[in-house]
Image (tube, rainbow over the protein chains, first blue to last red):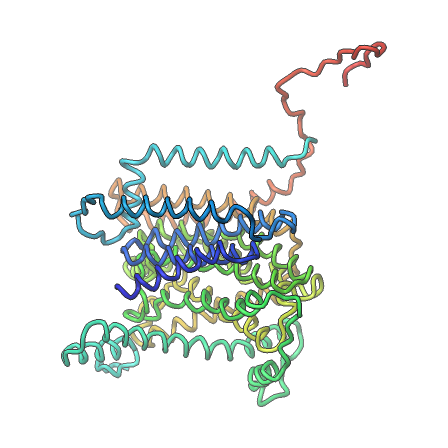
Length: 159
Length: 417
């Protein structure tokens, strides 16, 4: 369990660091996909099997493809990740942010859940989406329909 | 066949559980026992996958030859049985050329990585009553996730080749794969609605309990999933990825030698994997109306896998290739609405079954009749609807009225059109 966590954490963080350090934008995208898969592994160590599989399906399968198409449609000169003057300010800012988050994580009194583990998370999530959280569920589906209709209207030819 | 000892070939899971029990009695720590059991399962699956990858080369080429009214390979060995060996030797001794401007690591990784989803699909498939490597609660969703990761790897292969035709081929393939995922998901949603569980051994137990195969309850879902599978496997009629007459070889143009051999082998292993999934979900897996008490269930299951694989080869030998826009139109305008209507009707039937406590003996035969009638009506009716030309397009309503006001300096306005 501990081995699994440290391996997956190393994989996720390592590929996340590689996203920022590689020169080629497409290599960065592939490292991003690797970090998604690492995140899915971390979900599995927390017994959230449904969320882990959906993470791979949605993020590594669909969102990664979306980003791929976006990169492919951008000009080749914009795919460079070269060094520029913003590196030092960015490093300072990220350091401050990391310090803030670490302080919050260590000093907060997290109340640990005493409910115990679920047998089947898929069923629990399904029940939750249809009873207490049905309004956010329906609003999310309306949002998706609006997005699809908007995309079709934007691309449609005026005939 | 009627022995009930641990060497009983009807249930190979008996041997592994016997070993696990013996190890547990000997006091070996739990982690080691778990690893040994997992290792034995993995070895079994890899042996099966390796054997079928070799045999299927011969099966496919002979069958396609017979469908095309010619003998398949028959020169090497009796009936051409040594053809796979010859193919392997040829591919190993070929020079694995790498274009100089290809992306080093991104070029070499896809042939290796693309094996991972193909083999992982076998981990959740139940070969027998206790013969599953990983009985996931979300097995069906897991298989869909594996299918969607293949798309990214195919793009990697096409992009890294630094070849316009490879990139074109892989972009077409990604568009096709993500389009055919959605009808596949909807078809499987119909199956999961009936079975009440997403785990594959749970689906086989459902078919065992109600003494019927799910193909009788969900014929439309079977057809949609079969067609979605041919698209996911990049097989004819949906093989725009490797359309030999169009873009030479699509995303694996620049791969030669054993790297191409790996792509070729993965195609066959993927076909076996998805045929196994269809056999489990729709044809009952290892359960066959009681015959599995006589003949071992896993032998019947392998027979069913080959029956579905024969269907896929039959499609490949008979049908011509779809054009890209025909492929997209088929997925979005035909399979998707049919899948949605199938989910709606199945959910309604399951609702009647669970909420109103109608007994299974009444609702299940009724649902068989209704689903078959629905499948026939929808397939014929929807295709007729789609074939009607949409010539009667009335003018779209606009939010404003077009008026013609003369600009300063112009003469009289033209009449509005």
